[in-house]
Image (cartoon, rainbow, N blue to C red; front, side, top):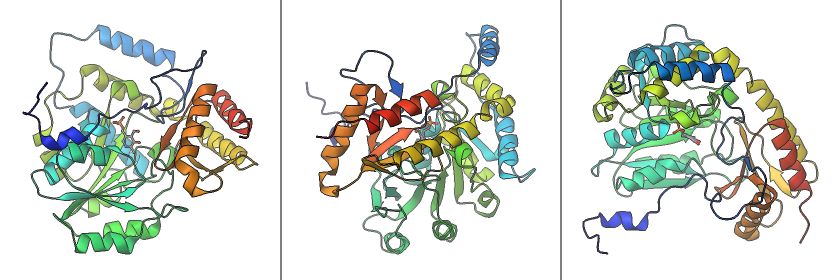
Length: 376
Ligand SMILES: Cc1ncc(COP(=O)(O)O)c(C=O)c1O
């Protein structure tokens, strides 16, 4: 079948799969899903009941409120609370997306599309920046992080900015804390980002903020070229509903509105996000448990297992097999397949294994399975 109408550059791309190992065979019994960094706990039943009642009352034949003002105001209030800067944000600082993935695409559209610029990412990092850029024909400049502490070589980064290969860098994407490696931005990296000229947009993706409690939100009042992305998919337990948001100065928010699809958030997603924010104390009360479990798993992995694991500020841990880096790709596949065969699904990404912190029972199974892998 000829599809000569398609852009030729798309032929080399493959569709994104967040569960590359999920299809294919798996063992019987429940699988521990520790591969996509969700919260291990579903919404409490009383909130599900509230959501069901609200859904029942929805006029299904009517479009949702497309301005999302109530939700935006609630997000602004939460942002003020979480940055401890009362009154800094209002609804005019907030943009909402069908997951923060949608906002990443919108940001690419308003900055780099049509040969206007390239993006800079530090590998390994969240893959969607490069994937979405390539679908839009936007060049991606990739810098490798230090293999041991995942720091960015800032001199190399500055060289890329000063001497672009092709089109200038228009956006720098940073995750804070980074996925899959779990490290936060260092003071040097932050200082470098802050001094970037205003014709470069700095995107700080704080998808895992609730687990790290570190934020760059205070920068937004100082920098018109700064946007913080966050999501309801992780700590707020709403991955199924697809809600992300961005916080920036009103000028950038208004521009993002121009490219947003009308009604990009279904009514039910709006209700779910508002409900989660209204009950945030209850939902976020599990954060200390996740942090404590993260420490428990890290200590366990450090206790004579074949894996080397790094401290993390997020709800996942990055690990690599101890030993020779040359055997790495096969070793990583081996670990992924072994754990999947035992009933634990993790992610083999960015030259390592990313293991989401699950419930205490899941984490115990993970550690036990890693410890009891037969030696070849
Ligand atoms: C760093 C980062 N940003 C964004 C996302 C996507 O979040 P959303 O579900 O809001 O699209 C993820 C999901 O794993 C992530 O790890």
